[in-house]
Amino acid sequence: MLLIVSFSRFGFYSLLCVPCNAGYNTIRYNHPTMIKKTLPGLAVLLALILLTACRPTAASAGLLDSTSTPTAAEATPSPTPTITPSVPPTATTSPQLSPTPIPSEHYISGIFGHRQTYAISCESSAAADWAGFFGVQVYEADIQFLLPRSDNPDKGFVGDVHDPWGQVPPYSYGVHAAPIAQALQDEYQLPARAAKPFTLEALKAEIASDQPVIAWVIGNMVGGIPADYTDKDGDTTTVAAYEHTVIITGYGEDHIRYMNNGRFYQIPTDTFLNSWGVLKNMVVYYAD
Image (tube, rainbow, N blue to C red):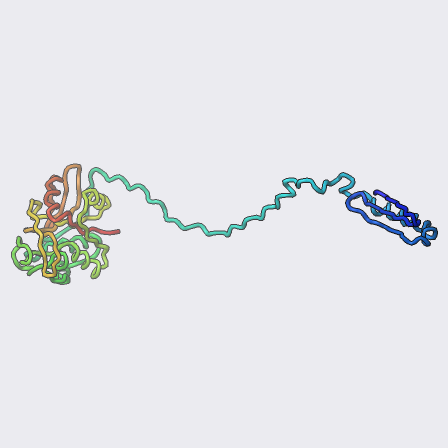
């Protein structure tokens, strides 16, 4: 603490007490008649001032520099913890496993057939035998007369089932895969699905799973000439004379086995592909 005493020519004095830390406090006595009377008290007052004003503080004792730059811990506030809401894990489906390699050959057993009842009811006949393999008793005639009628075989049965085989729409022809699959689904709750085109690999995969496939071919696996046909509604489809259906029941490295009217045949794969391709590889298969 800095103590400053000043006297004037009138006998006045001033006492300035400047603390050590900052600024100053001034105690001023200016009345001349009180100088002598107040000296004893002034001594006590000065002692108190010295004890209180000049008591060392943390700053004056050198323990804290009031102008120092705060440390990193002091300058940086404690980070507020981020609260991340708990999100339930997203349900994921099991990954698709690699398909089992298709064996080089496979033959389905326990399938039986019958000879078709009507001249051009091969589709209904094959559908009845196919359903029977899956444990559902179906009669050919029931399926035949469940089918809708149409001049387009993609929509329904074309013509009269008793008419001779080998014609094309709008004459008596038969029916394609979609109406057959729909009848099996609606009436017998079988997971039948029509497809076009179907691949040879997919066909073999179905056979390897012991699921026979109804295939649309020409005659008893002969070639044919496809033709575009436009129905009365303006929709176009592919048709061919002597359209026919068989059930594929097996395959080997270079051949296909099938059932036609209750009898089994085996032909080279290329012969099958040639006949099957005329109507664009059309099938009904078991969609499990």
